[in-house]
Image 1 (cartoon, rainbow, N blue to C red):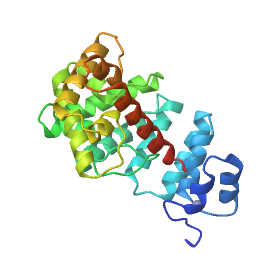
Image 2 (cartoon, helix red, strand yellow):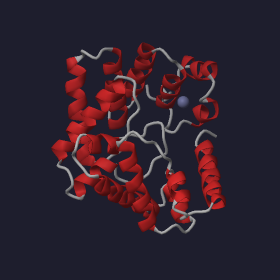
Image 3 (tube, protein in one colour):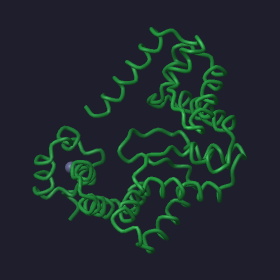
Amino acid sequence: MNEMLCPRPCPAVAAIRRDFNEVRDHLAAGHRCVDAWLALAELVSVPAHQLDCLARASALAPDDLELEIAYLEQRLIVDPGDTEASGALRAARARRVLMGHKPRIFRQMDASLTLGAILVQMGAITAQELEWLLEEQAAVRRRGDQVMFGDVAVVRGKVTPETLARALIVQTQQRISNEAAPRALGEYLIAGGLPLERLEQALTEQIYLRRVGRYETLGEILLRRRWVTRDQLEHALAQQRQDVLSLFR
Ligand SMILES: [Zn+2]
């Protein structure tokens, strides 16, 4: 009875993933398609509808840990008092820590570790502290605020800005050696010849500034320090934009 089960990625959905009606028709035609449900989850805006989509996607791919986590997180968005979901989420996140996986169901795959896993590897935090920080980050996000994991770790006093900057550099080096699709601006600048030590110093300054509520982009800091020219920065930003857009093609 699995003949209608689509492969992942599903080539049909790749071409239509921004079109609600086409994606719905793909499912209505009888395809059991994880990608179609994930596309729908992004196309609908009511949290309970997103939950339905994630539940169906997860049911089709019961071994997909990221999907299970996304589904459980959505359950808590719909019902913050769902204690069964929060327990299951804790367990699923613990499994993810052990596997060194990163949350990226809507993004490209690469083999790099999460920042949290790198901090554990460096001995900066324990696996238990990582779990606690992930919970803290998720709680902030449930209140509707976007917050980066690293900032949570600094603000909660678990790591210093210097340690976080070091972890970001380790992550950058891993991504470069994995030939993962570059994503952070720093990765493009490194590729363009910026020395790692300078990127690390600029990141440290950025984290310190953010901690006192001052938001300066990495580009602004590097320009102020005259470590990149405006031309170099614009070139890196243009490359980054192009790569991001190509993810949706
Ligand atoms: Zn499909």
